[in-house]
Image 1 (cartoon, rainbow, N blue to C red):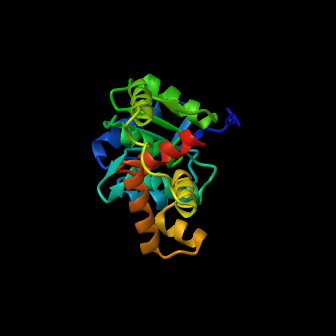
Image 2 (cartoon, rainbow, N blue to C red; image 1 turned 60 degrees about the horizontal axis):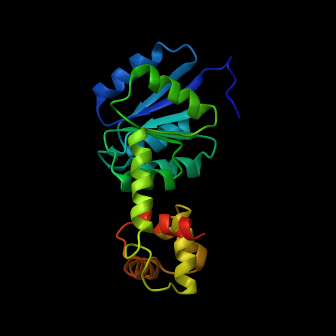
Length: 217
């Protein structure tokens, strides 16, 4: 649903560098249809601020001092399904982009982006659309191609029915604890299943396994 143009877009800034947040606030303060409602420098503060301030868009870096912005994204969207998360980062690595996408992010941009383009991106995401930086989109395509290539990831041994159920929940962005609860397993058992899945698929990350699941299904 498109935002109400008479009501400013509520924006939460999340970056562990105060100078970066100051620059972003200055940029968005010039946009009459966007209101910066708060800032956060850590993943924990980002989650707390998202709950307290109810932003329409969370503009967030991938790497924060106390953890991953991707994990923070997943937690924010689990708590506030109406929020939208747009990553603004310096890291174009394909695994990071994929992890962000599978965590539910609505956009992924690199910090080399121009100010006016970033403002438009926030409006685009607030309006219900998703947006990817060209480099980020290329990284996803290259990773998908590498995972689809003969003799690479995905050509391993077949998964057991229970492993397939675990992998399906991984693709949905579920944590080990959530998978354990859903399937009536212990956290340790889920971890063991994941180890077997990674070995059979010849991958090392949850995002890679999730890509294979999405391609197969």
